Structure formats: C-alpha cells, structure tokens
Length: 170
Image (cartoon, rainbow, N blue to C red; front, top):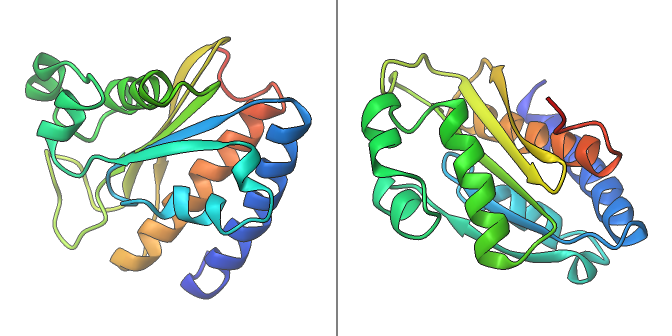
C-alpha cells in the first residue's frame, strides 16, 4: 500500500466502521502510540462519528501508557512498548477510561531506527470488547509516514472486523 492510497483506504474503512458502530449501537475509544491520533482523527473526519466515537488517548510515552491507560509498568519493563500484550492492555485502557464498547490501540515502530529490539515496520493493533481482547501483528514497509498510515488502516480494518463480530475472539 502506498502513501497515496492509504488515506483513501482508511477513509473508506472509517465510513464502514462508523456505519457499523451506529447500526449496532456500539461506541469506540482509541489508544494510539505510533499513529499519534490518526485513527481517532480519521474516524472524526467521517460524518456520523459523533454517534459512536467516545474519545481517545495519544500515549506516545510509556509513562502515559502506564499512568493514563493502566498498562502495567512491569509489562512495559519486560517486553517494551512494542508488543501484543501492550497493545491489548492499551485497548482495554482506552475502553475503560472512555466508557466505550470497543477499544482499539496501535503501537509499533515507524522508524527510521528499530525500537525495543523490534524492526522498523513492526506494528501491533489491539482490540478490546465484551467478547474479549486480542492483538494483531503486522509488518509494514515504507517510510515513517507510510508505516503510520498503514497502521491506521490496519487498526480501522481490525475495528471493522470486531464490529462485524469477527475480530477479537481467540
């Protein structure tokens, strides 16, 4: 996916997410690290988002992941910030702190250098809902902007799958 069509794909997926959430009377909260608010902003750019978007947290630093979202400090110390368990805890924290039906999170390495022993392009998306919590791992290529856009699209796609009842069951 190139940077040029990532925004279009994300907008199209966001439209489907907003429609599905409203149709199912579900609300959404975001917790974003590497995407730094892109997921929430993409949702907010979609007409009707006020009927389903509760809020979001940009948790770029581990202190915010722990202090605001409740990610255990021990987990961050053991595995670093780029890990599926961290993505799950972030999604749960977003859901809890914003009082939403579903929480979605992003954490990963946009580059240009590896982080916490993880390669550039490594991304985890977390989904937390009544049915359970699950993380999804992705490996993207491209520059920093492209990786962040691809992560945003992946988060929206996993969110749509969760709303369709397919995205968070183990």
